[in-house]
Image (cartoon, rainbow, N blue to C red; front, side, top):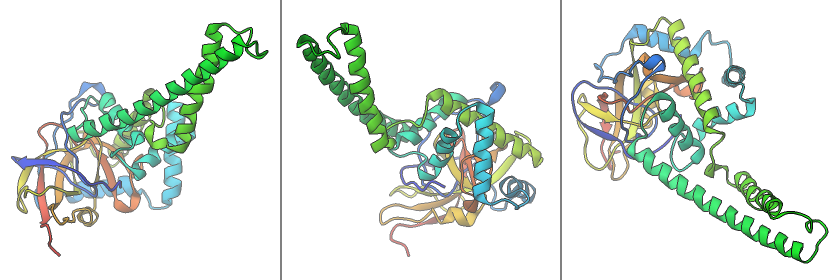
Length: 333
């Protein structure tokens, strides 16, 4: 899973949901699944888990256990590439990006989150919106510099034309500007992408949405093959770093606002590994009973780490609640 730290918005509440191996993020409203059906909120869970659905989740993750994670990921990318018509390397970069970062200041990640919000009718969390604004500002700075390079190139070409340089003396002003754009602006952007890819989306928004929809469809089909219906609930876990104010006690059910896409785990031990407190912040292991239709990916169908038993869900559906299963205090051993 992606390991992140940051804010999570939880407040005392009613029935609950949510948790796993990455730091949480504040979130907003839910949206609709294919066909316009509304995503239902996750619910706070009892302290015991449902054995039947847990076995089903295990089946989604591990299948018959005969393939290595490397082969599984290659199969995922190959299949999605064939389904969408998007080249293998682009799909591979999208799937691999989740392991690098699912959010933070990386435009490759935050652009995928924005694409998921658009594709599934959700909203970026406040934290994600803040990160997107920062990433857009960085990209705008690069584009402004590229425009300066274009203007400099145009002025050089114009001067050469006036001086009768053979290669440009017969070009029209429109042709000069096209050359300046290609040589100045486009070349600068190309070099910037090569030197610092984190400032740019991986691919077009159309491709992002197509890959995300394909991952969702594959995941829902895999869950259905294990006998799970869209409105069934499954129990998963998330470890988070909260804030300096205690959010609740063990067993409390609290309201939860997460991110558009966020990592949870079938394995509570994995989740607890991400729930460590800091010198000033509490750590929490959360539990959620989440509707199957809210699961966008598993480690076997798209994003996720097999050894962390990772599932990716829509974490900001309105009305979602989680149960605080265990917490660690600041400065505690």
